[in-house]
Image 1 (cartoon, one colour):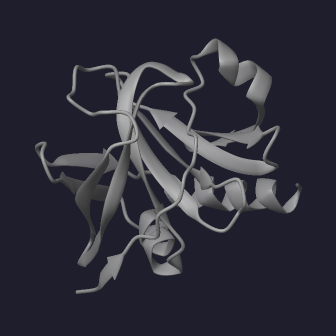
Image 2 (cartoon, one colour):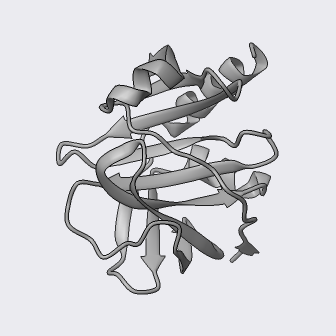
Length: 165
């Protein structure tokens, strides 16, 4: 079992269904259900995938490219507060990662609530790329599972996008 803490910093995540998205992001490509975008102002890339219930998972690089993030957003009612920090444990295969999730409400994710974690841990992103599920244990909410199908190819495309910046 591997136990690791997340790094913390600020990041803005976006959901492609919003109007502001078109001005800020350009579609780079699509692979195995993941859409890859370039953030026009940051010269950083991200990928996102929606499920049948409209939940969105995003992964990408921060503005300074010094960390990566994973965000999960929903249109369901939650008690998540904007910019609030909440302890979270993420399990991917036999590895456990401990850190803080930052809550988001509104912003460019209009209609969505959720949160994101930041990490500069290569093992975390290797696990995300090579496994098929991620279980998230928030401090105050019920645990939920995130489908990671296709993340290996998606992350490869994000890295290619990032190299092209």
